[in-house]
Length: 264
Ligand SMILES: [Ca+2]
Ligand SMILES: [Ca+2]
Ligand SMILES: [Ca+2]
Ligand SMILES: [Ca+2]
Figure 1 (cartoon, rainbow, N blue to C red):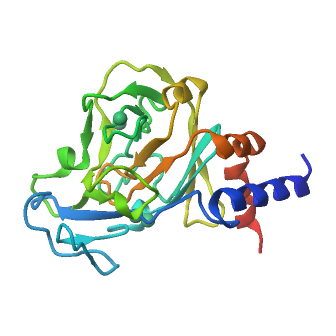
Figure 2: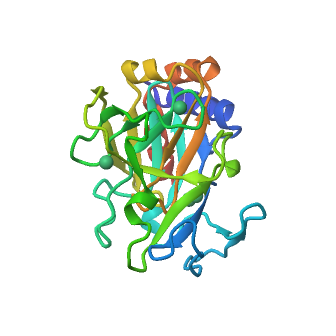
Figure 3: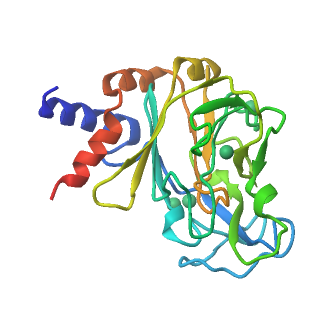
């Protein structure tokens, strides 16, 4: 494919989908409310330990943050085409080895009723397997990190009002699948970007089987690490213009961003 055509299609598609070339379809401005492990959700909030000042939550009190702690947890945004979900983040496939925090799994609410229905395993073991997680066959960051001793900060819950039309009110962040029988599987790949920040583009192939589950508008969430110190989250319209553009773009989104980074 000619370079000029790739650039033209990419600029056109990004412009139509996100209101401007270079923007993510789902920019990460999700705010999360962080807690120390020994002061979990529902108890007193720990002191802020973020490089960014706390944001007051006028409804629930406490503090809301974009990103907490080391930049390895940073999420920048998500692109969604008809075939691929691309997550831009600093979180490597192996998770945060300094604090032994695994990568969070990717969750979908297929009917926008506020409950999680399907999820994709993101860790190396069983990576790409797709599970039915309805009936809460998963753990949240609170399940894993809340209420235990220690000083690590974990995300606890997120303020979906801040991002992309999700039906969820502030809620716990799902991070780990506990369902045991996979429905099917797909391909998940970490692609290293050349200039860093974001360090990685994670491509998750939206297989026909998975799209069969996501037959209407759906929501997704990815908590970065299992402590959910940042989240990628959004409501994806289906199908309409996104499908058309997705068919044009295929898997070019991640590629296009890599190319743009290489420009002087
Ligand atoms: Ca955020
Ligand atoms: Ca972020
Ligand atoms: Ca649901
Ligand atoms: Ca998992």
